[in-house]
Image: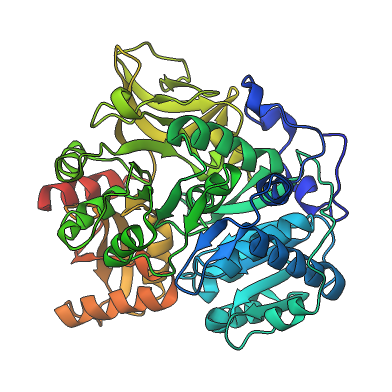
Amino acid sequence: MSYTAHKDTFARDSLPPVDQWPEFHFDLPELQYPERLNCAQVLLDDAIDEGHGDRVAIYSESGNWSYAQLLQESNRIAHVLVDELGVVPGNRVLLRSANNPMLAACWFAVMKAGGIAVTTMSMLRAKELATIAGIAQIDHVLCDARLIDELSDAAASAGHFQSIMTFGDGGNLGAEAAKKPASFDNVPTARDDVALLAFTSGTTGQPKATMHFHRDVLAMSDVVSRHLCQTQADDIYVGSPPLGFTFGLGVSLVFPLHFRAATVLIEQPTPDALLAGIQQYRATALFTAPTMYRVLLQHLGKHDLSSLRQCVSAGEMLPKPTSDDWFEATGIRIIDGIGATEMIHMFIGARGEDIRPGATGKPLPGYQACILDDQNNPLPRGATGRLAVKGPTGCRYLNDARQKEYVVDGWNVTGDVYHLDEDGYYWFQARGDDVILSAGYNISGPEVEGTLLSHNAVAECAAVAAPDPDRGNCVKAYIVLTAEAKASDGLVEELQNYVKQSIAPYKYPRAIEFVTALPKTKTGKVQRFKLREMAAADA
């Protein structure tokens, strides 16, 4: 921790005290990184030095980019960041775009300039962007020109950023970058310099910024990509998760490029678009959520998937029926895994003959796991308890008191309840908090509640997970109306649209039930577990 290239020390100053960090273990030889490390150098520049410049790095509808093209564009954008915008190492740069080659180039440019990437999903609204900007104290923004409206609204409410540049049709970044040299001297960042801030929502609805170093970006690849996915240079990866998720950053950019393979970036990864992408680009690996696999089963006959060698699931529990149905239809047994934004990527999984359908798997190389009782004591095999894990990556929240809740006695406590069987396999049981897992997305129940409560027809409300055959779970809102409001199908639709227009559309309550009162404790706290029981019974 002695060396840093960061001149802007906000991120380093915002790290939790070291005594609140989890234990880190770097036992694998591939995790022995040099003190000075810039992940962009390893992922991209070194690929050119190894002779891969002419190979395709990114396939997309807008055109394919070779490793050399990606490097040159990244270098030119890095020059714009430094020369024109005045970016210094440690500045936070917010990236806003769907998955496409320019977003990848911008991400690499931020790494090269020693900045800290804050990559956001294209679906986020102004309110959410403003919250992220405030927590991360965003300095600069690179935004797809098609998505500038919500960003501009966020800038107005969050205070002005130092600079905003847009790319794509109507943007100004491309023209400025074209004037710059195709070479760039990467900032010699430290392996423990913060490279990215990834946001997650907890039970309070207030987003948490997780802080990951340059070494973490490579560690997730050296564990997950090397050992679980076993990525080869002839692989072509395709998936649905946005690069704004660390799951997506790994599988759709870092993993393939680290092993000199290729990725397919799809802006709108609908079922048909994913399947068409597999057929068109002869993709060898598919990454998506369990609910998407279930939907894809209905479309398999329309496309040639013979190029697929493996399929990976994450984001929520993979049900055994989905695993079995996919295997029967394709002959490929889905690799399941659990990860967390706090851990940057997956840490438990299984592949090949080690897969037990319905189980998540065993700790990946480099990681340890256990289950804890309510007094934080490890439990033996055969017991059920709270999942805890440690290894080469771990939780560091930015200026957040919840660090003490996630890290306990050196363990990262994920908030998941698991059963550990006699053979050492981990079986998911439930979430231990109010985060709703729906179709691979983490949705904060309290955030949905806060949005609904701002509507003049809502007096009280609570949002919980309700079983859903297509999405695993959906958001269900129990609402007590104001005296003036009257329950109706029209009001249900109005409230759903209200949420869609206020926060990211995927968070809206797909089910709404009007009630006369919410179940509460004697102290007035809403008993959400009773609502979850009601939702399960209704389903």
